[in-house]
Length: 264
Image 1 (cartoon, rainbow, N blue to C red):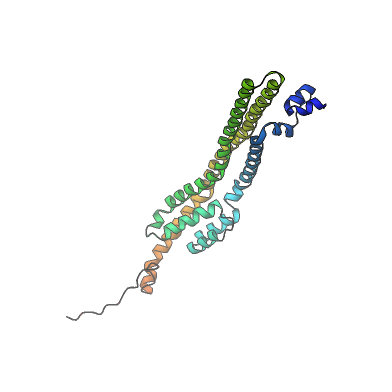
Image 2 (cartoon, rainbow, N blue to C red):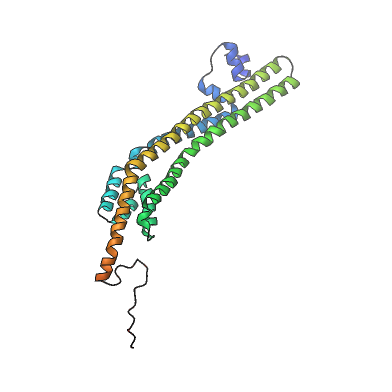
């Protein structure tokens, strides 16, 4: 590269020499917004990897957690099922849903009849939380083109200023520089937006499919087991109260008082 080309902007100098631009040179040609868009692309890649690791069947419904909860419910041990949910250090989808459903049903005298609806409502809330993991990609898919458009507008403003204020070779040089800035920023914005849009749609479908599969295979059977366990506990309460008065009362309820017989 001769002394004249050193004074020229990077895209113009490379074009005169007939050489192609490297990836780093394209980033430099995009200016400050180019570096911002590169940072957003790195963030998007990190979010995609995070979602690939988190949105798996083994993460949403760990076999050990599912077995522990089901075993406790089949044995009628609702408290044991609650402990199995709270002891799940990964806070999986299944443990969060069942902990919420058990908490709602055990505090309701008609909990055995509402077990299925409690599991369904808790599942909807947990599914919405999973979708929040995907919202970052949706934001990047929307922000990327906007930043690229901002760079395009900045480049076009600079190009028109060069046309109106410069003459001869200087005008051509500045016009080429600003047009390169505009087009490179547009391309970088699309490079960020297109993969993020595709990944956002794919992960959204993946979340819905996984939530549906886990609900059908694991949550619905556990809802039936929870209803059966609560029904059995409620049926045993009158017999326990007959043997030991006060044993069948609900937790927190006042114990019955023995009133003296009134004389006639």
